[in-house]
Image (cartoon, rainbow, N blue to C red; front, side, top):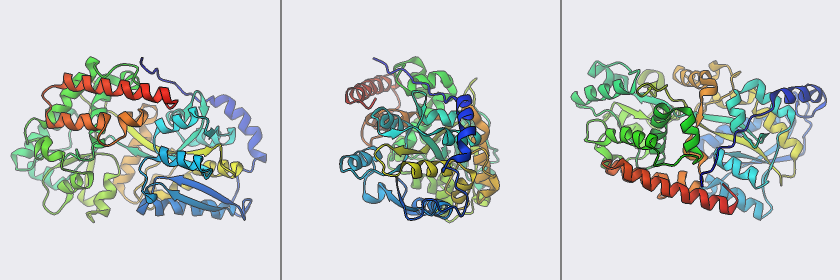
Length: 451
């Protein structure tokens, strides 16, 4: 049985009416110096560690300065746990759950809401979200028309990054259609540089490739249905997208080493193939975070040594705009609900987004964040592209699926797309395998109360 899509639409007019009367007396609008939470500790959990963790702690420092609250942040990755849902479940079991969780997948947010783990966000927070975010982001933070999650950090997953020097050598310009992109790739190959390096070892970039192709070819309506398993993976639109994707891996001209080499290449290596000392490819597809790898891992000036173009439209379709992100949710078992709501409202402000934006490696869907906050012109262009997309943004499909299908190494969509690029000769067979894996994952999730 297919799992029909739940459409979550915040009741903006009602929220506005309630919030106008509530905001004046609410403690959710602390101004600098109020220190209303002095002596109290807010517990926040998320996935970020390393540089991202340090940047987020600067955001937390801003809340401390504003309210006096101490904030304790715990990273699931820093504790060696990649599955954030399992991390939170263990916290609940041991009665150590945080006040706020930064949930990295919309499917996980909906699972948490369905299990009754989340507190609905109050009208004051929803009003701040309505002021600063397109409706689509409020919808992705909602479940059954109740607003639970504020999307603080986003990714733009419809960006194709290229090395300007290799383009100049081949005398080509950034393409504006998928067909033209393949022609550019052929020109690059003719000058001795294959078109793309693909991170097939990580697997999840393969799902992003497929999703961009599918969204442009099949359109938003079919994308939404496939994302929630309302239509099956044997649908002709899926087979068509797989055929288009498979064309990249027929030979070694369009992808360095074809599918075999791609399966040995992780994300950092794929970026290095384009921006390292000896470029092996002209382009790498992935999200805005590629810029952070270019500047961090390979010490390149993004504005001078790199550029991007939007993932191009396929055939008569529209250019896809695919995104993902991390949403702040208030845990029902948290001990400081008022402080949690105040913190989430703070995250909804341009002020909070600016703290991380200045440090790089960050993209915000906040429409009122001044683009000058970003550290380079390239990131400003990516951010503008995401904000300008407005309601046409579609959320990462695999992030909406049960983890067993869309988010687990060696299983489900990840494993089957790896098998497919190894041998792309039978897209119909791959579609049947994807359909069976999706059906089982959704059935198991439903039986366990998480789907």
